[in-house]
Image 1 (cartoon, helix red, strand yellow):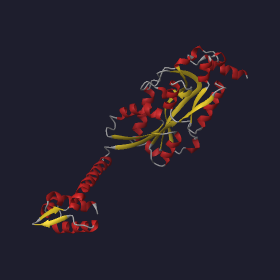
Image 2: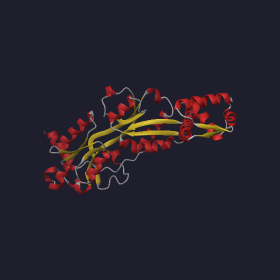
Image 3: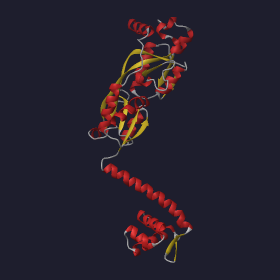
Length: 324
């Protein structure tokens, strides 16, 4: 069956006569009769009982009527949507990125885009860096939001646009009172046990090695107690007193009480540079260009959570490494 046949079938079913359906559709009656005959031949059963110049639906016809109404409604909506695209009134952007970045920046960026593209539709995927790249290469995403150092540079065939930098911080259960601990040797046993319990991230990137080296330098007696794939889960583990972790400050923004029971301390691990990865041709076109610029503006206006000075324990560990 074809859409043309379904439109004829629906018109005849609604008007109950070929004459009225012919006028409604602007088609000759013989053409309508021919298309209905072909439709009945394709489905293998009669759809109308023809009597006294009226077209009465059979049981099979009533079944097809329900489906035809749904099908033609969907097609009509699709055609209307495509006309909006053709007229430049509506756009869909597919974004894939780290949960922490998407959560912190995208709502504000979309708000900023509201006046530029009121009919903007966004398809959001939260994913690890490697998955983001796969989605970009397979055309399942238009823009990727990841850390610049989370993937090998040679593997990227897209433009990298700087969005925001946020420092790496040491997340510790508030009950530890880390600021009062000069070094691990003099820490209470319960505190030392938690401090030596490291929570790491399995992003499968070169950055993972740098994080491991940082733990070796600052907490040489640490052990890995958990591997996570999202910063949210890691911070929940810290809050529960299960261990400590090194996270970008932006991941710990106070959303839904994220920092309850957690202290953040400055580190010497540097900053995470978040970039938008996008194909060159998209970067020159609206609404992609508009959204990337809005993400940059959202990054500039973002207020990071409170960060305490680098703890004495960490400074002492650094000094011991330098002496060695």
